[in-house]
Image: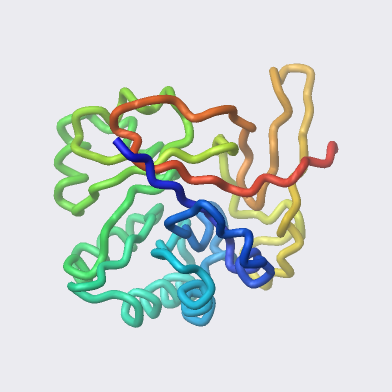
Amino acid sequence: MKIERALQLSAPALRAAAPGAFKKAGLLYLGDEFCQNLVPSPEDFALALAKFPGRVALVTPLLTDAAFDSVEEIIKAQSSPRRRLEVVVNDLGLLHTLKTRYARRVLVSLGRVFAHRVKVMPRSFAAGFLKKHNVKRVELDDPALLPRFEGLGLKVSFHTPFRYVSVTRFCPWERHWPAGCGYACEGRVKELEHPRLPAPLLLKGQAYGLKTGAPPRHPAIDRLVQEPLPAGRRK
C-alpha cells in the first residue's frame, strides 16, 4: 500500500514558509489540534490553496465561538459535494454541525484529542458513534492506540515526531486564557525536565507531549503526517 505524505503547518508558519517547505508532501494539514488561536482564517486557507500545489485539509481544536465561525466560513467557501473538504475534528459541537449541515461537503477525520475520548467508549458504542457522524479516518500519534481502533473501519493518519499527552486552554507562553494572541509560541518548543520523567516533556503551543521516533508499520496506516518540531530549549 502506498503511504501518503502530509505536512502540518499553523497559519503563521504557512505565511512564513518558503516554497521548498512543501517538498515531498502531497497534502497540507492547515491549523492546529490544540489551540483555538491557531484556527486559520478564511484568508489563511485561501493562501494555503494558492501556495500549496496539492490538497489542503482543515485542522481544528476545541473551539470558541469566534473560531467556530471561522471554521464554518472556510467550509462554506471551500467545499462542495464535488470538492469535499477534509476536516480534522476535536470538538463535539463541530462534529454535530458537520453531520447535520455539511455531510455531503466534508470528509471527517477524528482528531487526536477526540480520539482519547473515543478510546474509552464501549466498543459497540464507539462503532455506532463513529458511523452516525460519518467518521472515516482517525489521527493518531501513539502506537499503543492502534489496537483500540482496529475493526472500526477507519483509516489512520499517523503523526510524528510529536506525541500529544495533554493540552491546556491557558496559554503557557503568554500567560493568559483564550484572548488576544501574539503567537509567541510559533517556531518554539520548551523542554520540561523532572527526575520522575523518563524523557523531557515538550511544550509545543498549548500541548504537552513527547518526541517520538520512526512511525510503526500497521495495515490501517495509509498516511504519515510530519509536524515541524524545532529544537527544544530547556526550562
